[in-house]
Length: 84
Image (cartoon, rainbow, N blue to C red; front, side):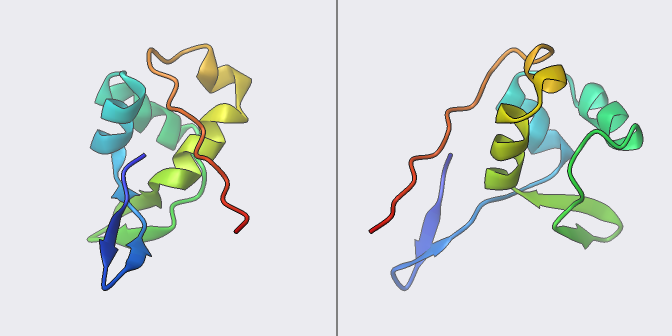
């Protein structure tokens, strides 16, 4: 999972349907179908009517959804939890 910083503060990565497909190694149409089937988590934002999620939310969702895990090519790594 990629993050950037602005003035030393972590800036979370936002993803749309296209980026989710790339992250998971699947076709964009599959992600769109899951969206219409209400299988994706609720979007964090909408921009010009298009859903946008935090990448971390999608990674969490994948790792906690056996249906999705069984249908993807790339299982994104779980982020390390920093309790410090």
